[in-house]
Structures are given as C-alpha cells and as structure tokens.
Image (cartoon, rainbow, N blue to C red; front, side, top):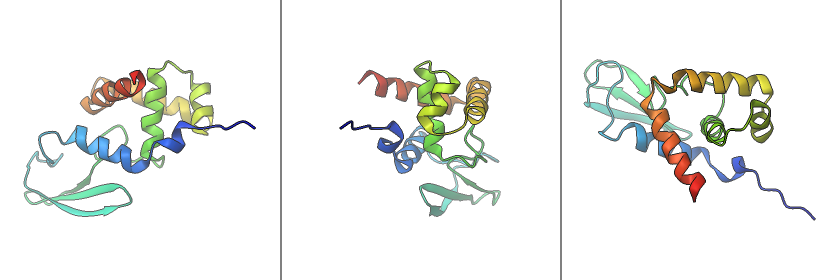
Length: 135
C-alpha cells in the first residue's frame, strides 16, 4: 500500500495569508492608495483581512496591488507555484503538482516572473520559501 502526501494538503490557505500579512505589513498596515497608516480593519472573509483607510476612505485587503490580487485561484496555489519555481520545476511539473492545467501554470509562472522585479513581497516570499526548502 502506497501513501501519497501532496504539499497542497499540508500548506493551508490560512497559513499563506498569515505569511503574506507578516511580510507585507512589516511596518504596519497602510493604505495602498494614499500610504496612510490610519486604517481600520473592515472584516475578514475566509482568511483574507479587509481594511478601510480613514484618510481617503478606500477599501483594500491583504492582496491589493500584489501579483496575487484579482485571481480566482487560491493564494496557496500561487505560493506553492512560487515554491516550485524555486525548485526549478517545469510548467508541466508544476501543473501536475498543483492539479491545474499547463496553460494555467504557464500563465502563473509568467505573471510571477514578470512582476518579481516590481514586488518586494515576492522577494520576501521567495526568501521564506527557500528557508522552508532547506529545512
């Protein structure tokens, strides 16, 4: 009898959001629109925290203005894709590991590569994932 463990069964969506919050808001939550730290929490849906700026009144969440925003895919799928990219897996291998089609894996890896230079959050996540990989 063979027992198979898939990494997506080990990593939770809650954990991924916790890490994104920890890495993104190192200097406290601030509004992406006006950069004000005068924000209030505006509820939590699933694992995602929502906020509202008290200065400009804009609403935002943990993923606003990140490579992960506006995606229908779960955050853990993006994080694991990034992890697998760090292991130098092909898009075909990533698709198989994440149970997604190859076109989706290609879209994700291209988007991540394209925005890596612009998003410090991605760099921080890669560093954290590399620490996970070495343990």
